[in-house]
Image (cartoon, rainbow, N blue to C red; front, side):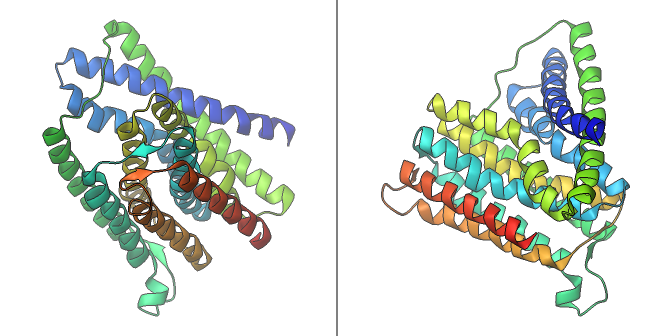
Length: 317
């Protein structure tokens, strides 16, 4: 038990560092191949920062822990909006572009609605089981391709890119290999540890996925967003979160269910509703007080809502 718990905690470090090494190494290789900074930011960096959630989900899916896999994504998206954006807004008020308000946040809501429709066979068709089938996974991945094309169009117009540094080729390759190994080991230790902890303390895998693992796999987003807010770079702060949430649903759940269908426990519908409500609150906050700015008091409200949600989860068990 103690060894498993230790590896569970070390796994988060490996997961985060692995994603970091993978992004730095792959970005450097792409730069040497003369790929534009814009494309590197939209592909290598975006995929790399989503790697922790992806690896955990794939391993959980392979091991038959669907509650853990789905709970991780839903919990990550809730913590991204309420916890991480809440912290960022408290550090420094976040000015948000009109494109983000009217295009990217609604796209995030579309992802949530699409997930609810695809995953609730039992409620919609009165079927025997609710699950994300391989067909559902394919549909989510098609949405993801549309999102990438759409994001590339916006970024090209707004001129957003990624500041990429070149490293020696051998060092870049070494970092990619080390990153992939760290992600694999870290993800395995986290999933195994989560299952043991759930069994030992009599907790559900859903609860572990929605809380500990969701927050742990969101640490890269937390660090990036907090630093961006501290440097008053609100575009990066908001863009990281909204993009990550859409990636989580379309890319990670899509790929996970394509590899192996994920059976859905309908009690998680409440958490999908919380995810949707959190996104709607973020949208409405743009029209309260200072327009198009996520203010400090709003950040405090979001943090309060997240604490209330965690208390609710603990009571629900």
